[in-house]
Image 1 (tube, rainbow, N blue to C red):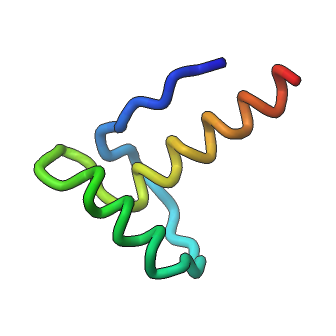
Image 2 (cartoon, rainbow, N blue to C red; image 1 turned 135 degrees about the vertical axis):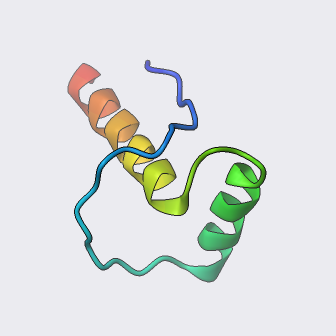
Image 3 (cartoon, one colour; image 1 turned 45 degrees about the horizontal axis):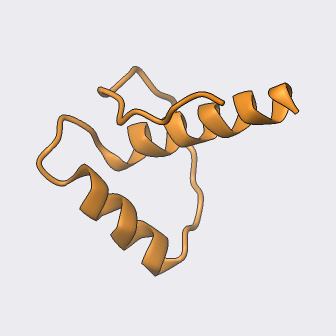
Length: 56
């Protein structure tokens, strides 16, 4: 299983998605003080999830 690492900000395309408020707060707490934004964190989390699905 691939280890999740908080990413640096990559080039992105804008998409609209809704998150529960508690998830937003948890992500914001995790990235506080790091060179990462909400979108980059979510992108990396999705990449790791997709890789984990492939491995199963």
